[in-house]
Amino acid sequence: MFRTMAPERRPYPLALPGGSDLLASDVERERAVVLLRDGGAEGRLTPQELEERVERALGSRTRGELASVIEDLPDEAPATKPAHAVRGDRGDARRQLAIYAAVNLLLIVVWAISGAGYFWPLWPLLGWGLGLAKRHVHHGARHRGPRRASEWSTS
Image (cartoon, rainbow, N blue to C red; front, side):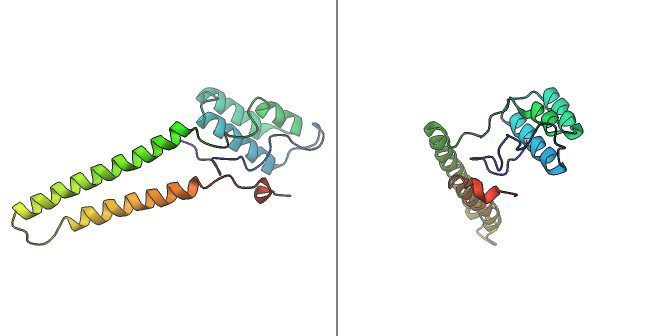
């Protein structure tokens, strides 16, 4: 659905510095929209509420108006996954690897029974294997830990 910049930590705080009557910038409006989309992706907002709030955020003139659109959303996403979710990720990877091995073994058996000419099972082996490897590498990079808030500073 919607992707966040970092699943472990939001790139900026919800609190807007300065008075509520100061004019909001385009960057602040975009940040609010990202927070709203994250809230929708997390199931905190219904699609209708998300749409209405995004319109209000983009139409906000002051920081006070903008803050009222996002004030009931949490400051940060959960810092870590629950232990059962991590176990589920490992189980999912094992299940995918088992399916990959079983299907490709079946393809090799079909190749051998059909005359063992050109080794055409190479293509599903490579294509699917590269996809699994890419997913594993991407998944590992995404869950290495939270980034420091200072890395996201825009000041």
